[in-house]
Length: 617
Image 1 (tube, one colour):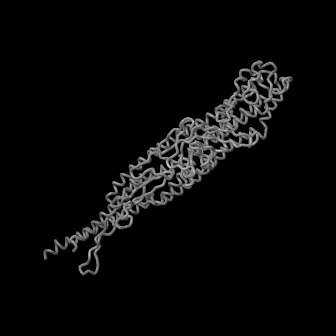
Image 2: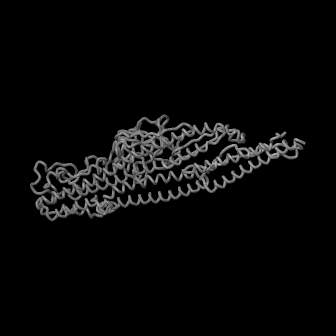
Image 3: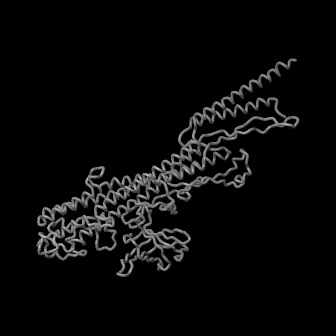
C-alpha cells in the first residue's frame, strides 16, 4: 500500500535527480581541461508499486545510483601507442640536430656558424704541402706544413670531444628519464590504491581515474606502455552481480607494462635503475666509459635494445648507442665451446673490448646476457680465417650449449647514432694516416744530413718512424681500438725537427726532388682512397648521411605528431566538455527541477484543500 504522501515522495526524487544533474554539470564546466573526462549521472526508475486491483503499477520516481564518465578505452590505447612512437622520433630528431650542429664544422666556412672546420683544415694542410712542393729546401715551408697538420689535429680532436660530450649528455638524459619513469610509476601505483579504496563502496573514482590516465599520457611519451585492467572476481566477471548496489564486489586490478614487461601492478611497482658499465665493458670501442645499462631493481633484465621498445627512451638509446649494426652476430654450435672458452671464427670486427657482455640466443628463443673476459684476437695466417677466443663467466643453471643458436657481442641498435659517426671518423683518420705514412712516403728521405746517424734506423712500422707525419696510438697493436681519431696526432719528432720531414725518395737528389710531396698531394684527390671516393667525398658523405637521418627523423616526428593530434581530437570528441552541450543539460535539469517544484506546489494545494477545507463538511 502506498503512503498518503506518496506523490510528495515521487516529486522529491525528481528534485534530487535534477539537483544531482546540475551538480555534475557544474563540475564539468568548472573542471574542463586537458585530461578531464566529461561526467554524467547514472539514474534509473525506482521499483514500481502494484495498483490495488493488480492490473497496473504506479511509478515511484527515480534515483541516482552513480556518476559515470565518457571515455573510449580503444582511443586511449591508440593514443598511448602512437604517442610512444612520436616520443622516439622526437628524441632522435633532437639529438641528431645537436650532432649535426657539431658536425657542421665539417663544412667549415659553409657551415651556419661560418667557422673553420675539419674540411677547411684538410684544405689548409694540402695548400701548405703545395707550397712546400715548390720550396722543398726551405725550412719555413716545412714548419708551415707541420703547423697546419697540428691545426688539423686540433680540428679532429675537437670533433671527437664534441661527439663524446654529446654521448655523455645523452647518457645523463637516459639516467634522468629512468628517474621520471619511476616517478610516474610511483604516482600511478599510489592512485591505484586510492581508486581501489574509493571503489570498495561501488562508486566510480572518476577524477582519480582521470589523474591516472594523465600520468599514463605522460609516461607513454617516454616509453611504450600497455594497460591491462582485469576483473579478479570471477563471479562478478561472469555477470552474477548485475545490480549497481553490487558494484562493491568488483575486484578490478590495474596493470601497467612498459616494453612488454610488468612495471606497475596494483599498488606495487618494479622500479628501474641505471647501472654504469665498468671500464673495459663498453659495447662499442669508442664508447665513453660508464654508460648506463638499464635493469629492474633486483637485477631483473630490462631489454633496452628490444625492437619493440619505443618512446623518448628508445630515441635516446638509438643516438647514444646506435652503431648501424656493426656488432658480432653469428651462428655458433656446441663445438665452439671448450668449457667456458668460446672460439668464434671469421669475425668482421677486430676492435672488440677485452671484456664485456655477450648475448646468447637459444633455439627456444631464450635470451641470456652474461659477461665475458680474456678476449684474445688471432688475425690468422695466409689461407686461414681470423678468429678470437673469449672466456665466458659462469653459465646459468641448466644451460646447454647444444641448444645455442647464435651469439651477439657489442649488441646495440641498428640506428646510425654517435658510435656510428665516431667509427666513420676512425675510418677517416686511419685511412688518411695510413696513406700519408705508409703508402706514399715509405721510401721518403729527409734533407741530407738533417737526421743524426744514430737515429736513421729506428723502426716502428713499415717505413721509418722518423718520417711518419701522423701517429694513431700504438700502431703495432693489430687490434685497432687505440687507432682512433681521439689519438690522431702529428709526429712529435717531426714537430721538434722539421728538417727531418721526408720530401724525396732519392737520397742523392735531396730536397730538390719533391716526388714524396707530390705523393702527399695525390692523397687529396685519389678517388680510390675510400669506398665513397676522394677524401672530400668521404667528408661530404658523413655530413650528408647525418642530414638524411635528421630529415627522416623530423619527417617521422611531423607525421606521428599529426597522427597523435588526430587521435587526441577523437578522444576529446568523446571525453571533452562542450560548454554549449553543458548549457543544454543545465537547462534540462533546471526545467526538471522547476517542474518537480511546481508539482509539489500542486500536490500541496490538493492536500490543503482536501484536509483543511473539505474536512469541515
